[in-house]
Amino acid sequence: MTDPTYQTITGGFHLGHHLETVSDAARVATICRATDYHASPSKAFLELGTGTGLFLDYASHRYARAVGAELDPVVLDVARRTMSSSGPGNWELVAGDARMFGWQSRLMYC
Image 1 (cartoon, rainbow, N blue to C red):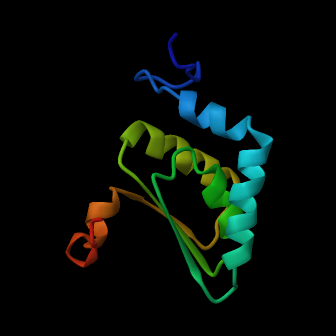
Image 2 (cartoon, rainbow, N blue to C red):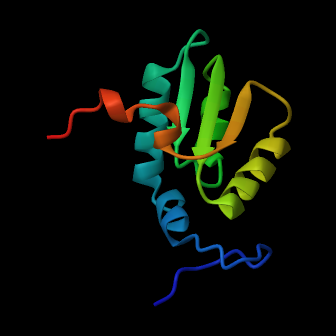
């Protein structure tokens, strides 16, 4: 079985995981509850592996600033389109992953 793809996107953009996530109402509700639980107009939100930006868009309406990091340039372009349709705001998208934030030296692996 192959992952479903968006027909309007070139480059073999596979969205199987994304489609599985957003079609699971319980999973979406859990993500939204967790986002809401920590939300504050004085806090920042960071999403690593932001994917298509759907949850970043949700968070951008609840936090002072919302930043999404995505390593895949094709997926990052989809997230830019998602966020642009939301209008200008307190969000930012960056190309990269967790390593760009310099956390490796502060992590403890168990």
